[in-house]
Image (cartoon, rainbow, N blue to C red; front, side, top):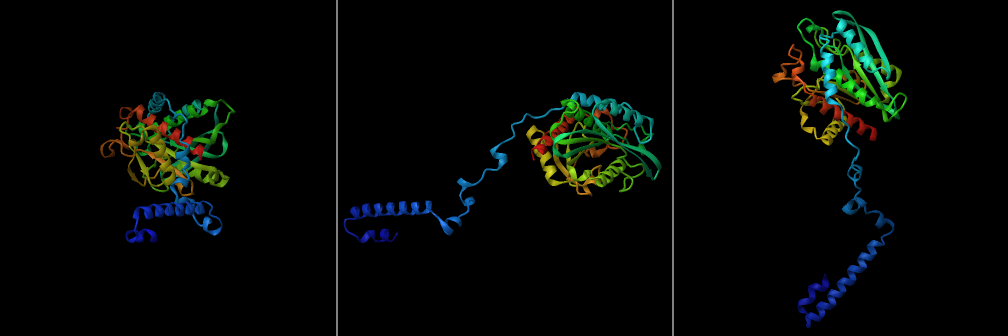
Length: 345
């Protein structure tokens, strides 16, 4: 730089300019060579992240998931919903409830099935409660749990309430998941984590929702799994509830693990379903709460915007004509993709 400053006062400028240019090139080449050979403390002090050319490419960008998207049979799932709803009110202790238990068990015959049956002491007396668990073993060490309740609202037992969406759709989507997960044949493990489907009982309050008058089956199961060590093996737990609404809008239930909620949204994006997720958010209590309270990563997949001002919720208007196979497809495909993404973690 000092040479350039003196150029105006030197005769034969063109000659001097040529010499200076050659000198500058020589200096630049020498400097570059010295930098490229940097050793010792000077070379080590330069972090790679300072140069965009050496910045590591995130694994997601370097290797995008090319696996085919999973699809449920939405027409079959919708037919299951219709058949479940046709039993009528299915509150704990009712004959219709027992019929539905047999219906579920007949469907998963041949799978690995366990019962979690007990008697719940409630504000309205004692009720038989039965969680039904279908287990699909995997090659990886860990469990993904999907829950959905199959009971209907006890206080509405004489109102004509049949719970097509609230109880019917959650029961049905788990039946369809059983079809998808059981395709490998008896004794064959799925390539990924074990998946447990749980039809929970006693989710609804028998009088009015409180911490003690609600989620009877889930509370019992969470306590049981805490004692036997199962909770420590659960990688993710997802609840399906009211997922058949024709005007589907899955809320971001903030009573859950943010990373799992984000993963579900990413799965929805991959399927092109993201417009049906998370336009609303807030805390919602559901079957996942006893597990959240014990530190299990949970997500509640629920549409609690059912009709104008939620008018169809817990009313005799919760009927099949308010539901759509497309909504079951959106949720069903998204959660199957979420399972796939969890398997890759």
